Image 1 (cartoon, one colour):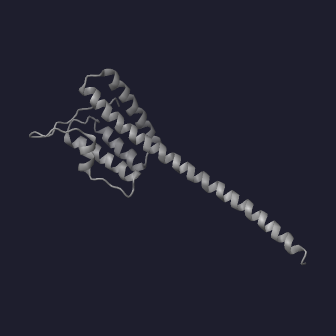
Image 2: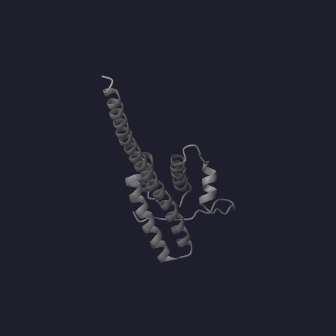
Image 3: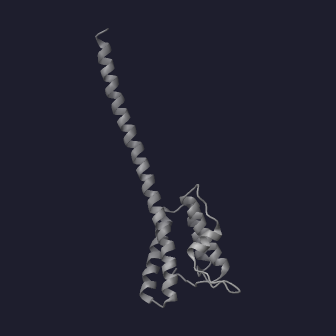
Length: 156
């Protein structure tokens, strides 16, 4: 019986190493998949905002070529948000698009800014920005008696 103790110890060590390797592989794979999905989601959100801002600037400068490029970026980002975006982001973006997605009124701009705030709080769960801070960072506003809003329409 005492001759089997070292054998059982060796078998236990080998089994422990194998099981530990399997668990390490599995959890690393799951973590990498989550990281990849988060990266794709974040990049889609960034491209959407970049495309909206770029199109607004291109429209102000009557730059048709850049406007087309930015609309293509927006369309691509919308498709990636449909795939990788959270349920709340997809439904909020769909609601904005159903409303016509022309950011030419304060209500529509506010709705888009709430979308920006929502995806920001989703991405950085502990770092929530105020809507006024987002507004000041994303849009150039000239204050006279009222705001001058950059108009932007999307190809839907």
